Image 1 (cartoon, rainbow, N blue to C red):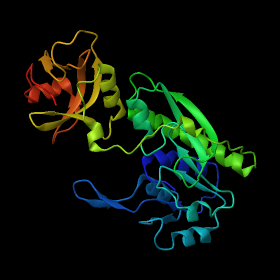
Image 2 (image 1 turned 180 degrees about the vertical axis):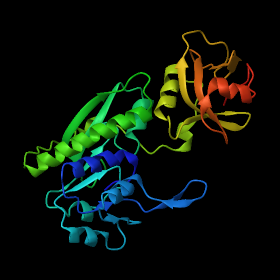
Image 3 (image 1 turned 90 degrees about the vertical axis):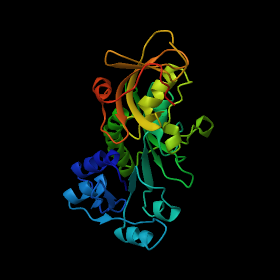
Image 4 (image 1 turned 180 degrees about the horizontal axis):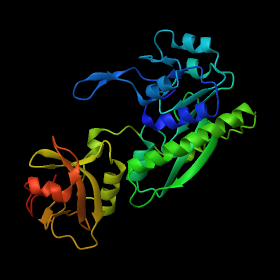
Length: 302
C-alpha cells in the first residue's frame, strides 16, 4: 500500500526478490497538469509495469475494501507513504501489517518527517519499520537505519536518500517476519516529536529570525512546497540560499541587489539568495532572475 514516488523502490525491491505481491493498493487517479488529464500515482505506474492487480479505493472505510483485501488472503501488508489504515484492514494479515516511516521514531511522528527534520536543523535522520497500531506512528519498532543530513542537503536530497535506504529496510523487515526472527521493541513515547502536515503559512519566511534558522526552513521546504516571501505583493519562492558571514546592513527583510547577486538581511547575518521562482514563472538562478525582474536595494521582503 503506497502512493508517491518515495514508495516505488520498496515495491520494486519486493518484486525483484520474488515476493508474490498479490495486489497493490494506492490512491485513485487524479487530474494533473494544465490539461487536467487523469494520471496514475507513481505506485500504480510501477504496479502496471509489473502486471500486478491494483485497488484504488476513494475511502478505506467505505465500501468493501476490507472484504476485497481479506479475499486476497495476504500474509503481510507493507505500507509505505499511504493513508492511515483502519484497524479492520491492518489486522487482516496473519503476520500483521508494518509501515516504513521516514524518520527515527519516535522522533518526527506525522505526515512530513523529512521536511521538519531539515527545518529543525537535524544533522541525522533515518527510516523506521514498525507494526501498525491504532495510534498513528506509535507501533513497536522492527528495524531502524540512520543517515546523516549534510549542511547543504535539502528535503529533496534527503527524500531520495531515504527512499532508497527505506527499500532495503523493507526487504530486510519482510525477511525477518517471514523467518520468524523479528523482535519488535516498544517506542519510547516520552521522546516523541511531531511532524505535522505542511501548510502554506509554514512556508512563509520570517526574516526576523537568525540566518541559520531561515536557511534551514528554505532547505526543509525545497523543492516542494518551497519557502516563500512577498515582494511588491507577489509571492517569491526561494529554493536555495547561503549565509554570508557579515554584519547585517539593515532591518530584517531588507534587500541588497548588486552585481547579479541578491542579499537579504535577517536577525543576524545576511543570506545570499541563490535560486528563486517568481509568481507565474519557472525556477531559476538569481543572476538570470535579476536580469528580468526589478528589485532594488533597500526594498523590504515580507
